Image (cartoon, rainbow, N blue to C red):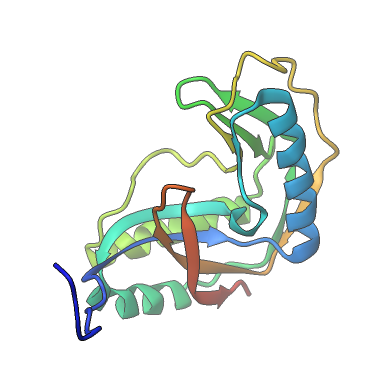
Length: 185
């Protein structure tokens, strides 16, 4: 229905997730690797401004619960850490070429576990599945191409904080807005 007075109310829900967001230097390295994978596998390359590492995908959540979500995230005490991403692979079932860490640091797993526990305690549903840290490089990738997956030069990511992100799905791909940032201590 048209809104002639321009008084649209914001959506009552938000599609949200927690993530690590790279600094500019790390983003540039990840973007170069995404370009290389796109050249090798085709598909749709991840845009540089959307490159991230998802921690926990919450999904649709009532906007009036966002402050509580932020409070619980801010209460987490997890030390900062470094992740070494050193392996490229491709999932054939969903045609995603990705970068992963062969040895995820314990602090990363503690952060994910802490977020999941906080969500459980708040009664907030989330996408519950075994955590597999990965950075999506290409969607709709031809996983048969470049099947050798040569090891890239390791990319070291210093995680100093994490973010709460709202995702809006668009025909050209998802758009992300960072709603809040939480320090790792």
